[in-house]
Length: 410
Image (cartoon, rainbow, N blue to C red; front, side, top):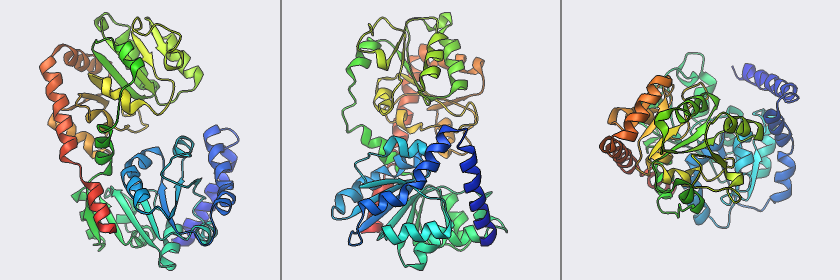
């Protein structure tokens, strides 16, 4: 199995290089991984004490951030290396203050794993949720270097729990401890005789709870909102935008403000979205030259402020689940006590179903359902407040993963 895996990794490397010629995102990853060892050699010395944090992408980074921040405070003499596999994580967080060095993780070949660890030699490695690479982890184990997995979420159809998944099962046993999000994940690990487990919950709850401790004031959003009801649509994709534009262009949306934060902020896509809206629209990039209160729609054509923008919402729509791209973070608006609307493809996100069951999140699958629930929440103040409060309570009840992880690391 290991031989087949290594052949597949080398084949993947070839495919990525070929595909990168036609895909800008893939090209960034290919070029970035090529520069990783040069960057590490330039910024690290053999005498440095180090910690290594690895995340697949931006979502996993946000998930691990509460832990990263605390370890940054506690281990001031250590250099922290943060690695990403995806460009969407690296490009946005390559200058994060929680790390001394941020790099792309080279593909999981035996040679890359040995070279990486020869340079980094981490006292502790923390992997977040998934992106579990056999060669890196088996090499860590050979060198008796500590590794833990946090916010892990397992499903019974994953290779770890199949007859053909021996290599991947062995990889899980390289972790000295695994912190799972739920009991289901713990029981799956127990079924393969892995028992160094703590059900800590999801660190994202700690992450979003901390948002309430920060200053979320955005004067330009206050000017735009102008004390009216406001719907904030975060991390939207084209299929999400269709629903929103159709509603905005209808007669029922009068006196309602809308803020849309697209996942992709390329100028041609932003301009296309703007052109389809039959009302006054202002972009973030135009906010200093346009009258804000007169606009009906505000489009966020920048990154990094969505968490604050959610604090101005009366109702939130979170994108990704009406298509097949994956639901984005619904906990970010939930912490501000607002009801949330999402698409119906959310099976891989257990918190979504729980929040649907408790009445704080509403799942829709088409325009008619979207229009119906949004209208109801806009009109029915009591329902809107009840649903929002339910979400806020849910966040408060599920905090605490950070404390459990830090207590273990002591």
